[in-house]
Amino acid sequence: MTSNGSNAPDAFSWKFGFANQKGKYLTAEKFGNKLNASGAALKAKQVWVLEHGKAADEVYIKSSQKRYLATDKYGNLTCNSEEPGEAERFLLEYNDQGQWAFKSVPFNCYMYGEEDNMHCKSKNPEWWHIQLAIHPQVNLYNTNRKRYCHLETPKVADEQPQEVHGCQLIPWGSQAMITLDYIDNKYAIKMCDGRYLHPDGSLQVSSDGALYTLQVKSGGIAFRSSDGRFLTNIGSTATLKARNSKVTKDELFLIKDSQPQVKLTGSNGKRVSIMQGIDVSSNQDDEELSEKDIFQLEFDTATKKWKFLASNGKYWVMQGSGVQANGEGR
Image: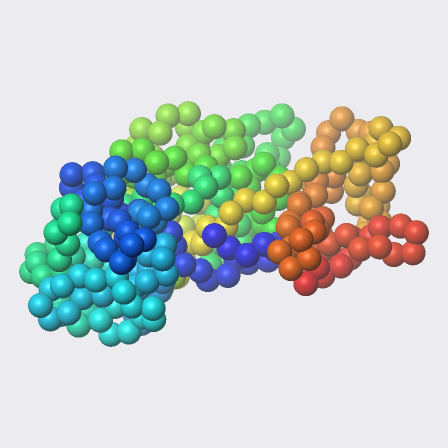
C-alpha cells in the first residue's frame, strides 16, 4: 500500500471492497467498465481505490481499471472517467454499525443498487459494508506523532507486555507487526503475541469488545470503538487506546505493508549484526536476539535487486573490503 522504505509512509490511497445489504460487492467489469453489485467475493474487479478529495470526508473512487465513479443530475452512475472532476466527488458518511454511504457532492444523492441496476439518486443514505483490500499484516503509523505502534518493551525481563505504544521511528521486529482481523464487518487489532487491543488499551486473548469500525478522513484512517471513541496515542509513552469521540489529527493513522525482516548467520556460525556501530559483522553468538541483529529486506523495483536496511535506519553499502550500515538507499 505504500512505497518501500523505513521512513514515514507516504499519504496514499486506500483500497476497499464495498458490499450492499445483500452482501454483493460493487464490481467494475473489464468490458465496457460496466457497473454491477453482483460480486460474491472480494477479487480484483471488486477492489476500489479511495483517493482523498477536496475536503476531509471527500473522496474520489477509482476502479481496478483506473476509471472513476461519477454521476449526473439524472442519477446515472458510470465508471468511465480517466481523471477526477466535479462529477466524481463523493462524500463519505458513516453509521454506528461501521457501514458507509456514498453521497454525490454536486447532486446531494446517494449511491445504491443491486445486480445491474446501479444508481445515485436516493435522497436517503444507502449503506454499504466495507472491507480493506490489503494484506492483513501491517504496521500502524500515527500521522501526528510520526511514529509507529508496537508492543511495549517490559521493564522486567520475561514479563509480558501490557500495552501498545507508538514510539518507533522505524517499525522494527515482531513487536511492530499488527494483524487486522476482519470480524463481523468490523476490525480487530491483533498484536504479534495473539492478543487483541481493547479500547481501554489493555491486551486480551478475546476479541469480544475489541472490534472497531473504520472512517477515512483527510487521507488517514480512524478506528472507532463500539462506544463511539477513537483510538489515539496518549501521553509520554504514546499508549494506544480509545479516548475522544471526534476525529482530530491525533486520531488519524496510516497503514504500511510490513516488510520482511530477517536474521542472518555467517559461515562462522555467528549472527550478522551492527552491535559495534555501523560495521556489519558476523560476530554475535548470544542467545537473545537484539534489534541490531535484525535486517529488513526491501526490493528495489528500478534495479530489480534487494537492499538491506539496518535498525539504525541506514542501508548496507560496500566500504572497501567490508560492509557498513550507513547508506541512504535512495
